[in-house]
Length: 256
Image (cartoon, rainbow, N blue to C red; front, side):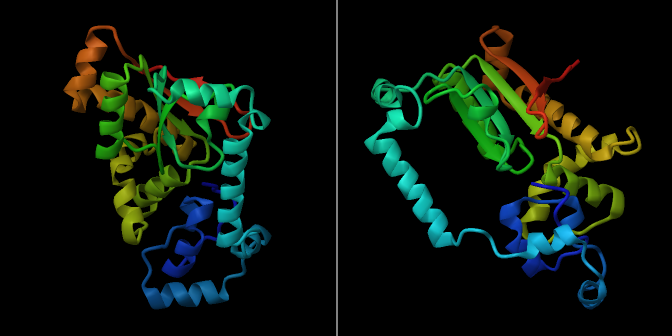
């Protein structure tokens, strides 16, 4: 979800077209009327990177699907060609899984927990991903399952720098941007965090990213008596973090 590669105004069709590239604050529609927005887009000169964002993807949907199928075939036929002893690991996990960490993080394609945390292998991480690492009903239920039934002892809520979903929420709060479709609903849980962060940091988006991760971590025990009970017994620890997509470093945050 890149903040650097989208034009400043998008109509709904263009926004949907670019959804696969990630949400971006600069790419959200303004509060202007449809006719005003259309007129502005037609006459506004786009920066060079915006033209690149509008270009056709390198792969067609069919090519992308084929690549996934080919990769899965390699995994099934010769897993050891992908990573050490995955074939053996697959067999070990056939009877059940025992992940040692639950990760709630963003769907951004640059944020891959299995790689970010040292190239962990099958069966180690129980991962939940959505735009903006939002603690919604689905995420919380998945966390409860991982903590109570799979006995994972660690829960990490991890945001990341240059998060488009968080930036979109910040634009709603700071600029009054109106988001169309389900995107507006999706970022609603982030709005209270953005409101509390407004005017408190020179980097509004970065500070909201961190506070959103901290808020999500706190809300887990506030909204789930199951996880709260496990945490009170010392069986589960909950932490928050922010991943730097440029350096690769994960900073664990003070939740006090």
